[in-house]
Length: 276
Image 1 (cartoon, rainbow, N blue to C red):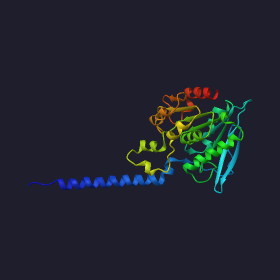
Image 2: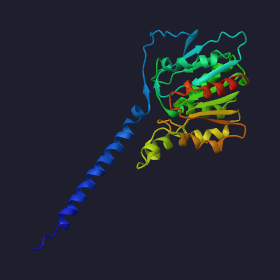
Image 3: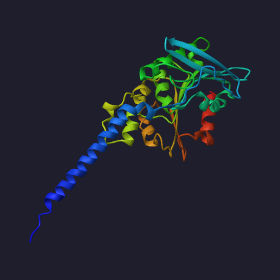
Image 4: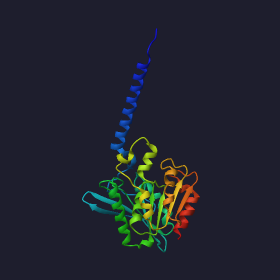
């Protein structure tokens, strides 16, 4: 007696294809509608919350429109001669309180550090969009220009902030652009983790660092670790062909995403840049 097993086997394969397609679609829908929660991890603070920084600082708030307040912390330097200001655009986690520990990297070298929180981060409020991130960065730059010339302004971006910083440096003059753990673009980064999805059509955010970097006329310094598990070294490395001959891409061997501050090469290179 002969049994035909092709039909039940075909049904099993078809069943598994349906299951895989359902899972694929569910993940895609979740990515589309929850992308803000996946990409950004802000911690909001009440307006009356007091910061407790060890450094000397000043807190200011800029009303951008009826619903938007931009919270800025200006870390002062004790240097006799102030060299300028570092406009610091931080990463996607928490708020300024998380990044304040990096201010001494600059204040000890004679620079003030002005950090801005994005809407929803810390005490900043308003609508979070890519266009507005660029607009808020420009507001910070305009504030800096009331006290400093472009030759005394360093634009610094860390992680998420690297795309914002590069866009600002592409449209405004500055002394130098410094990028710590940058990405080629947000789309390329998400594509690295989810290559099976058409992320170009799904993401609300682009932050194409590769588009803005060739427009930056100021010197550029990039820091990236070879063991970065958040923004792969290979993703940042794609920016190298877009850099000018005198720009520098500093590779931190065994450095990961959040520990470059622990490496001597990071400090030696940063100090040499800040001494110029």
